Image (cartoon, rainbow, N blue to C red; front, side, top):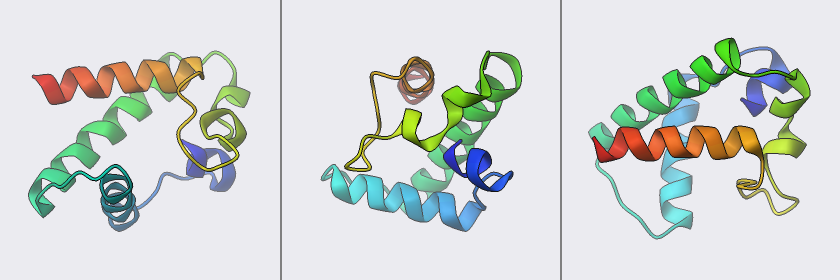
Length: 93
């Protein structure tokens, strides 16, 4: 969503897989390349659905709303919380 807000387009598959690898490393987690691709595909669809159908104010998708100053996810953001819940639900299923 941050890339969409800044650049007008979603991250590429390669960028998403790399971002997932970095996030996993930062959180001391591991996943196979196939698991990363599957998670990326699902997360992208969730984010797109939120942007297309539920985002009431485009300002809510600005990077400063989605991330802290330390560039970690801003869980206090209602948009981030919504996407986080849906991603957790998707992984649990």
